[in-house]
Image (cartoon, rainbow over all chains, first blue to last red; front, side, top):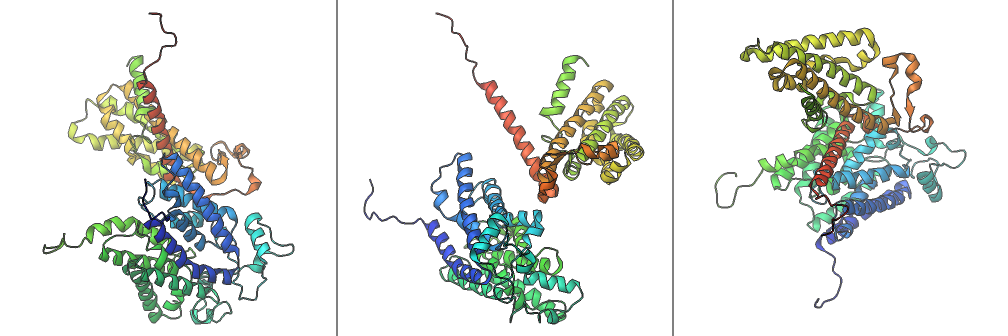
Length: 341
Length: 230
């Protein structure tokens, strides 16, 4: 028999996941404002798929559906994946990515808390490796003078792949700021000249720079709530700023400024929501700093010299492999003893 | 070698000690070359041929080989046989030869070939050693075929593409399109290196499941259908 109070209390894990979801809201709102309503459908598709996959996997593994299904972790994984997707991508892309994230990256490794790799990033990496063309099809931000699709047209495009008659995808598409810079650099243009094009705003892509500010705001909320250790975002952002700053100082014609790097792509999202995944990051303070800094270095390297649109997913996955190793070599000294270990 | 011994060797090589699924030997070519059935089976058969001949050759000279010098001598024998296979491929299946490339010469360093020479052929009569080599090779070929089929099907929805490399241009029409060609189906990951690891993991899991089921069946007490009246 239970005693009072009879209020239904959320579990600690539910509370954490709920706070993370709330912290994502400012970024999501700005994202929808900049790119349109497509993102909401992607989030919905990812959430539904994640819960369904989670339920099926739990059933297959002979586990109870509760509390794993309602702890919110699958939903947060799904959201992080959906937030990295092009908002107008076809529905099956995000569904496939989520199935891979929950089924392969999470449950094949033993479920919540056992996964070696960040599930959302595994889903994203599988998609970007398998379907590079579809994953590069970003719609233009609404602030740019391109053809705007109505909400209904966006939903039809995602679900049925059908554009309104007489409209080609090129009319509504635009390269992401990172892609635009990379392509122009390959053609021999210089960074200051590239950034003069109307696609770019004061610091990053016009419109899309606000999204990064949204992630930053949400991240600071998580920090204040003491849900993420400071070493991870500081190490990550610090490394990105240090690398891009050094390169920018040495050759401003070839390397974009640190502010540009911070305000484009998924760097801000990664710093506060992806590298901070408590399961796949190291647990020691020094280890966290090292882990995040190396992830930031890799992100910048892949962005500057690689072929993929953004380096976040691969950088995080590569560092995930190293996390147990980092943990082992950064163990703090036992209290009362001199020296390490 | 009597019949029961031969059967024992075959079942050992094809299933219980399968080179690809149980011993996990020679994985480098298994993972790299298995992006479609034709490449996979060709390399598998080439390896089988080398293993058949090297098994017999090693068994034939086993009494004259000083123990300290056995490794270089075995490798010399294997390398000579691989060179022959390499030249044969170059002469009779040149298209395939170009696709398989370095992986034919690399059969020399395939650990499963040397492992069977060392563990089996160097202490068994010629016939048994040759039979073991052939069966081990065919066991590996089976794994390669399965992996090739999984990856090819997942990556492009076809089976038996590239047959023209073996049988000439006529064979171009022999490709089976499980998913119609004009559907534009493509899943790149399966034909890239990660697909090889996932595919092999699936095959190993499948074998373990089958083994476990067989074990449970053997362990379950057989219930008599008709009970005798007491």
